[in-house]
Image (tube, rainbow, N blue to C red; front, side):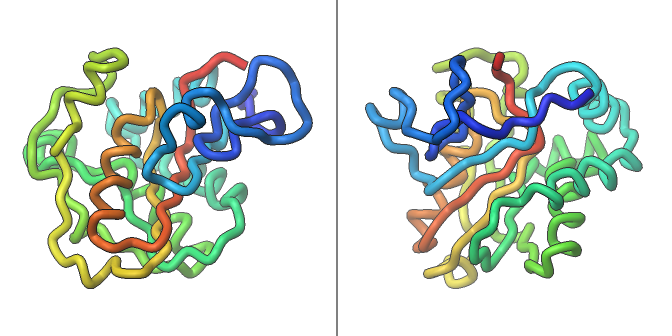
Length: 200
């Protein structure tokens, strides 16, 4: 069973609250420091069958799983006027090693369903970083700091961009991507991830 995230979340970062609250409000982290993105949402909790599916997809090369996982994301895409979908990029060395970018495969399904163009060439990961799964908290922030860059700023200027990634943990990667995109002149940055590491 997939543990979908619905009511009782932070209206900015999408973190589920421990208590089952029917309405959304802002969490203490987002009150203390507003993220560079307008909103982030995750489809489900990173556990059980979904965790297993993501691991088989991402680490065991089962790319056929991208279609059903991407469909789940497309089914639950929050309504908005998105101009461009941008999958979180991999460094060229990691892309060569893995053979695919899992975020791009998920983004393609969403793009096809909702007729939103994808740009996967102009947000780049120019520095090879440690896999975030090995790190915690502040280490994750430090790891991705300055890792991303924008090639052609004109592509993003005054656009609403939807960032796609597989898992939201501390939000370090999404935050850094959003920061770079905002600096490039993006109007609004929104994020959608398949899963989120949290306990409901």
